[in-house]
Amino acid sequence: MTDQFISRESLAAADAADPLAAFRDQFDLPEDILYFDGNSLGPLPRATPARMEQAIRQEWGRGLIGSWNSHDWINLPTRVGDKIALCIGAAPGEVAAADSTSVNLFKLLAAALRLRPGRKTILTEDGNFPTDLYVAQGVRDLLDDGIELRQVPGDAIAASVDDDVAVVMVTHVNYQTGAMHDMATITQAAHDAGALMLWDLAHSAGAVPVALNLVDADLAVGCGYKFLNGGPGAPAFLYVAARLQNDITPPLSGWMGHEAPFEFDDVYRPALGITRNLCGTPPVLGLTALDSGLNLFLTADIMEIRRKSLALTDQFMTLVGNRCAGHGIVIATPRADTRRGSQVSLRHENAYPIMQALIARGVIGDFRAPNILRFGMAPLYLRHMDIWDAVEHLRDILENRAWDQPEFHTRAAVT
Ligand SMILES: *Cc1c(COP(=O)(O)O)cnc(C)c1O
Image (cartoon, protein in one colour):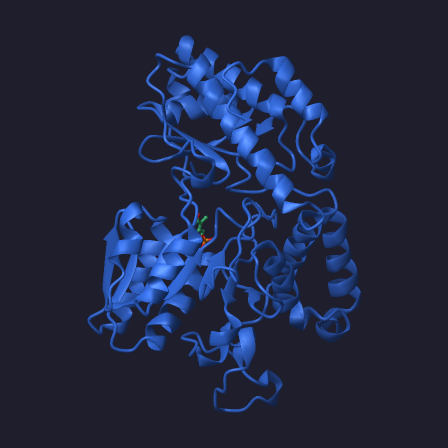
């Protein structure tokens, strides 16, 4: 819907016809805010507090240690993983919920290098999320084996895979710009050169349709606390294609990845399947909250989510173009539907204080250094009318230089 004449009325009509409208009520959102940060921390699903209360008071409080068996806590990583698999086009048994995205990147990068002995290059994208780059640098330095981390511009990745590349590590949707890669093309290029493909789905899972099996992806990681609404610091996930699972040598060979942890054998023997990628005791409460977020998410149709997400991002960019012109805003997100995820990013030299002024008015997005205002679009609770209201606040703040107050220039620890 590229409509140059978007009106308040047309957005109200879109809300009235929205097949996802009822989902908003499933979230415990404050009344007086517009929440554009579900790509950084998803909001609280209404069902989660009662589920947590039960997990804490009954499963932990009454069941105590017996709940590892009676409530099957021990299999939570794969039970929750199977639900995540449904969100990312993977099969049951190919995903585990565990650790953080950073730790999972470490595990899978190290495993990938061991699967391609002799190859010395990790290929990634300029401007990939810092933790992806930092973890790759750490793996490189730890192995001390001539491994090189090579960064190229996003549009040069497919053409840059050569026979020295062991693994191509790419974030599907860029955290800064919202630009989205073509998974099939890049995965194919990696395979044509004999490399493994590792996708970071931090800004994809729960936001855009992902088909890991269809594109024949080897490895993937992603976040539980963003679009999957698993709560602050929720466990992340990792995916290993079934065909590779028993060839993986886990670099973090903890007891939860052992074939038989409760035999307490002195010698490590990796479990078969995805389980060998687990390390320590699962975070039961975090997994329970993530499970609750997934139960809600899985009642929605991802194609409806994508349709609405494209409409929201398109409307936002069109309205910013129409109503905020002349104030130095540059839209950083690609206009083509196939090229963007579920966020809109705007560049402005005063991005930080502008975002603080928006937040002070209840329009919650975030700032990414050096000059990006980020607006995540989560179709399960955002309304088309919210787009209108957010852009009106932005226009007013720009026109009246309302951002230029001392309090909006002070940087907090988390931006
Ligand atoms: C959010 C995000 C992460 C987060 O990693 P944590 O280990 O959960 O802090 C990693 N990679 C990308 C691309 C992200 O957007």
